[in-house]
Image 1 (tube, rainbow, N blue to C red):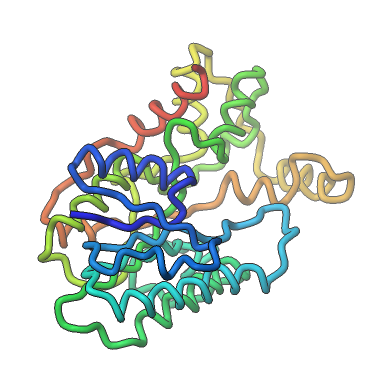
Image 2: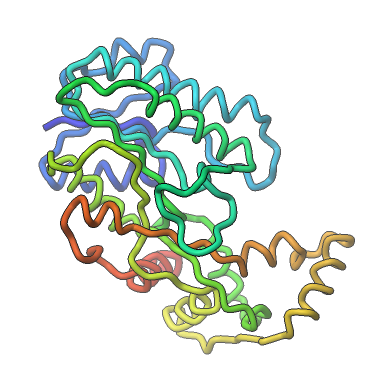
Amino acid sequence: MKTIITGSSGFVGKNLTAYLNKQDIEVQDLSLRATDWKSHTDKHATGIIHLAGKAHDTANTSSAEEYFKVNRDLTIELFQEFLKSDIKDFFFFSSVKATADTVSGVLKEDHLTDPKTPYGQSKLQAEEYLLSKPIPEGKRVFIIRPCMIHGPGNKGNLNLLYNVVKKGIPYPLAAFDNQRSFLSIDNLNFLIASMLENKGVASGVYNFADDEMLSTTELVRVISVVSGKEPKLLSIPKGIITTIAKVGDLIKFPLNSESVKKLTENYCVSNQKIKNALKIEKMPITAQKGIEKTIKSFIK
């Protein structure tokens, strides 16, 4: 079995490649940056896993055009090559942000799409193109919507929280009881390999997430324990935090309305559809074990 992976040099790509190789699945790296990438595509591979894309720029320095050129247009080109080839499976890594920037309740695959950013909109337009095309007999098309992916070596938002704990800075938002979904790279790898091998999984949109949800306060506790530190949690009344955040907006203080929102908002994602499709009851590792593994890599 051979699988083509775009974006193999990224965090997910490196981990997924290593995992698939251990499952005796050969991986071909495909760089879409090369002008002649079409001639390097193995038309007889088993599947294509399209990871390459322009990630969400939290600093908001990227133009909207960049997102659409990479996340939508390149995906369409690659998908057209897939349709003309003998390749059976096409995996497009979209994002939960393609359907919603904020979530009320638990996000499922049939949620009414309403992305607010060029990143989410570009991913959604790519999804819509893939879903608009008839799938030839014998082929499968998967749209994967992962939530926040983490794992050893990933310097993302968890690393920011880790540095707060490491420096002994008290976490001031313990009064907020939010719930968020995460996705361990171990669980992501398991799901992709299982879908490649299980030909009974039907084409469609699938959310990827760990089974459990955690609050930011719980995250701080886990990070503290793994780091060998006493959790420093401050339950400052929400009204006072809101006032401080508004002041932070004016004086460019780190604790501002945007940072408070990111740390305290709910974003719960259901993974029940993919578990039903694979006929599994639970993911290989729990959300907490995944977080612990990631934090241990920061300490090393």
